[in-house]
Length: 103
Image 1 (spheres, helix red, strand yellow):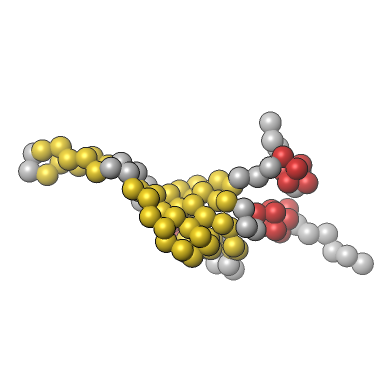
Image 2 (cartoon, rainbow, N blue to C red):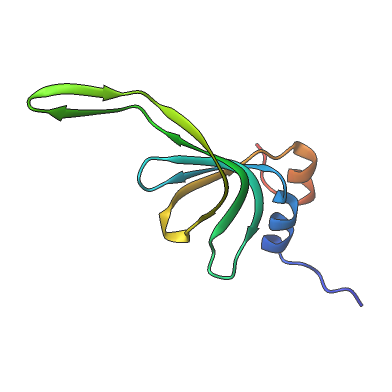
């Protein structure tokens, strides 16, 4: 008899090799192919890139702006405590299979 898989198991399986966007608590964004979540809740992405937002800071009383940057970082492990949010590209078919609210 086959055991029914939990929603979290089905979600993880549906996300494998899908493009994931993870916002970090320090303002950076990681984007890559979802590989897995380890037992500590860390996300592993492959073919990842890191984006840094445009920032403004003051040096010697002068306002200095740094441009937004992106760089390829390969495979990364994103610790659970550094995640601010996580978004996935999912087509409607997978969302319906997972019984997710897609309104």
